[in-house]
Image (cartoon, rainbow, N blue to C red; front, side, top):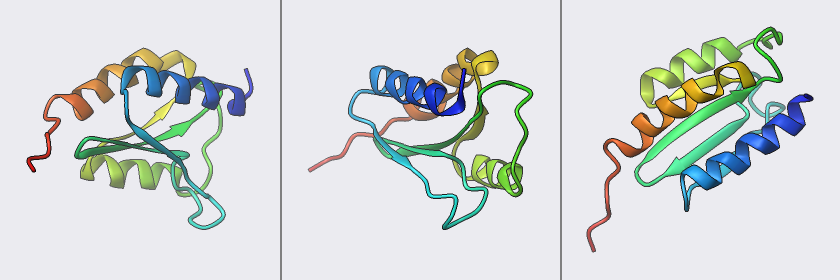
Length: 103
């Protein structure tokens, strides 16, 4: 499967599993190595770097940003072979302490 097709599949699944989430596609020309997708959900956020398969090569700075952003909230590489594991971790990160706004 090509990476752009898999990215579309990931976005569709994110919208199904996290209704009302906002998904942003990041511009790696602006910030080289920044993960592909930002997911905003409630008061939480996550970044995902989409890869076509587990053996796909990493671009410069991608691992740096995944590690840095993982320390702030949630960030991960996602590919078909680890998709279930990443979505399990996303549910923990985005839903476990999902806040509600008080008016």
